[in-house]
Image 1: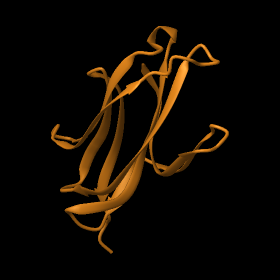
Image 2: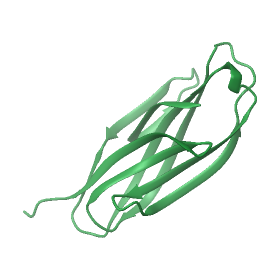
Image 3: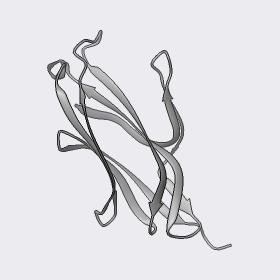
Image 4: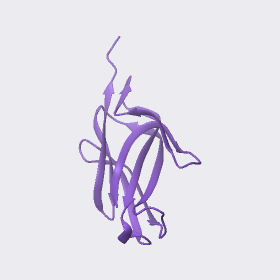
Length: 133
């Protein structure tokens, strides 16, 4: 499985027709003071697997790390790649909602997406302090 698309957004969903709708894509969060709490964001990513992966079980992990490598959030789950598809590749869209994420200080952060223990994609973003008025 490969991660073909990964981003942060304010909101995302998948329509009845299978279209991925994404609103408010960003890579920077502004805060008045620290520690700061970001009310809500979504990590959106699309996994793509080939024919040989059909019907196999996969372990997926998402880790939010700060610039020092400290893990702030860690999600882990397992899924089975669908065995049937009208297309040669299998696509799986994931939309993960993160609420009230606390940032102790400004700096660089990133979501790391791992499949089977291998990092497939990193989604970096920056948290910055608003300038004094």
